[in-house]
Image (spheres, helix red, strand yellow):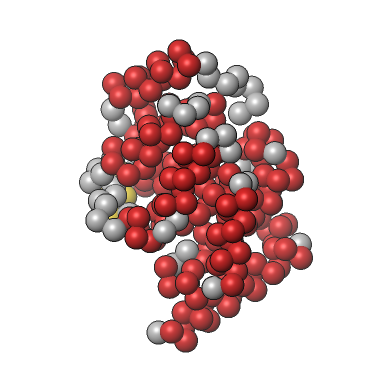
Length: 215
C-alpha cells in the first residue's frame, strides 16, 4: 500500500470508468482494491454498489465469494479518509440494512447476511475511527446482541484490527500484517495473549453463553 501513490482525480475517474466496463469478480477486484487504498470520494459509491448490488444473485466460486466478503474491510481502509465510507459501514453494521437485499451465492449457497453485517463491523475496526470505538463499546456492554446476530467473532476481529491499525498505522498494518492470512493468524494469537485480547476472548465466551440463555 505504501508504494502506491494517492490517485489524482483524473486517474480515479479513469479507474471508476474502467470498473464499469469490466466484468467478473476476478477482473473487478483489483480495481476495487486500488480505489479503496488510494481513491477518494468518487470511490465510495463504487465500493458501496459492489457490496450491495453489482454482484447480487451472482454464483461465485469460494475464492470469488471470499473476495466479495472482504470488500467491506476495504471500505474500512477508505473510511480512514472518507466520511461517506464510514457512514456506509455504520449502516451496514446494522442488521436491518441488509433486509431485502440479495447477496451473491458462494459455492452454491447464498451468502449469509450475518456475515455481511460482520464484515462491515470488521471494516469499522480497520477504519480506526472513533465511531468504531462506540460500536465496540456497545457490543462490549451487550454481548447477547452480538451473539444473536452471529457477529461475536467479527466483533473480536474488529477489536484486533483496530488495535493493529492504531499501533502501526493503516499503511504498515496492511503491508506488514494483513497482507498474509497466515501472518494475521499469528498476530491474532499473540494479541489474544495480551490483556486486551484476553478480555475480548472472555467477552466472546460470554456472548455465546448469553445466546444460550436467550434461546
